[in-house]
Image 1 (tube, helix red, strand yellow):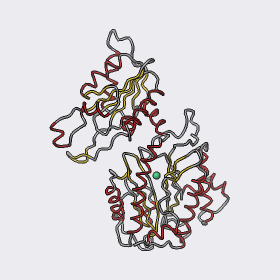
Image 2 (cartoon, protein in one colour):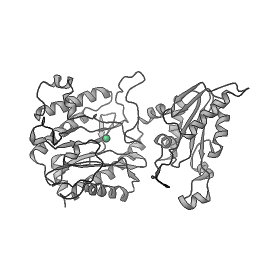
Image 3 (cartoon, protein in one colour):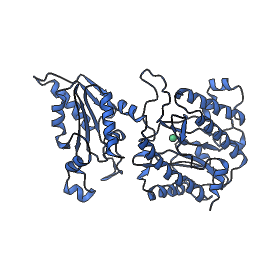
Image 4 (spheres, protein in one colour):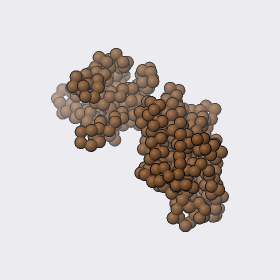
Amino acid sequence: MNEIHFLNRRSKLLDIMEEGVAIITSAPTQTRSNDTEYSYRQNSDFYYLSGFNEDNSVLVLIKTPTSSKTILFVEAHNAEHALWNGARLGIDGARERFSVDEVHDVTQYFGMIKEILREHINLYIDLYNDSARVIEAKAAAQSLHSTRGVKRHIRSIRDVTYLIHSLRLIKSPEEIETIKKAIAITAEGHHQAMEKCRAGMIEYQLQAIMNYVFLNNGAMSEAYGAIVAGGNNANTLHYVDNRDELRDGDLVLIDAACEWELYASDITRTFPINGKFSDPQREVYNAVLDVQLRVIEAIRVGVKRDWFQTYSEELLCGALIKLGVLNGELCALIEAKEHKKYAPHGIGHWMGLDVHDPCPYVDELGESLAFMAGMVMTIEPGLYFRADDESVPERYRGIGIRIEDNILVTKEGYENLSSIIAKSVEEIELMCNQL
Ligand SMILES: [Mn+2]
């Protein structure tokens, strides 16, 4: 993504801030074991505003009644660090690459932030994730408060993330393109898993096939820990062991996707390990698919998210009645939340720089948000029938199915960004029997 996009985002944040200082910090590195680290993943908010991928950096936005200024603090180039870990961009490099007003060595941060805060009354930080640099800023504000001769003091500390997440809710055309790139690679991963799956393989071997496709196409990593769940394992919603054998006659549920330039995709497909749905599997599969298609069909600008959740629950409950899992009258069953036992999770979530984008679901008054063009959400209905659940007709026991696509709300209605991935019974059986 081009520097102009990051510049635009910073000016949008300055627009919705009141006068004051906003501090957004990079993610810390995380120790994996002893002296080795997890591969670095930037804080999504910091990346959204800076496009900068190094740790130990801070972005400061300053707004006065008449002007604004952006400052980026970065770690200076260091020969020792460069030898072991590769060169950092450094101060001159950052000045060249980023259109911020000033770039400084991060070692100057504490002294400079103290000078900056002398002039302001509002401080915007991540209230719920105090990083070392945020703690330093608070300490600077506190010491100014007890310094004689300082006329203005920080009087309110606000959450900057809420403002950033409100901006992140609506995706730009460039963000949509980036998400589409992630989905294109993920699609190939799912298709290869369908083609290469055989009874007797281990779940992690399907994960390995997908990860090969992700890395081989230049994606940096999975967007989240993959779920590869054969048979009854699909009924454990966050199953990530992925170490069981895939058995002939079972389904396998794969919830896995890659990240491209820090943007996520999030796709689930469920398919027969031997390439052919049994009758009971097809019945449940088509019930879930029908719900998914109808929910997607209802997406349009102006529909409230709450209505949409309710609608999907009605459809799932109706499907459970049709399958003979629930008996009774729809409204009464919904009222008693009887469907929740077999369809326990929500219909979907915002998706973007985070797989579960932390964007708001309600407005300032707590009212459910209505869909607007540019929002991206997952639609992922599922039905889960545990093998040991005697309340379920025997033919359906041990079947767990989820189908998940990534949907963009458009002016005209919606665009299914992942429509290229095999989904109908016919498409899936064809894909499974390619090789
Ligand atoms: Mn999801």
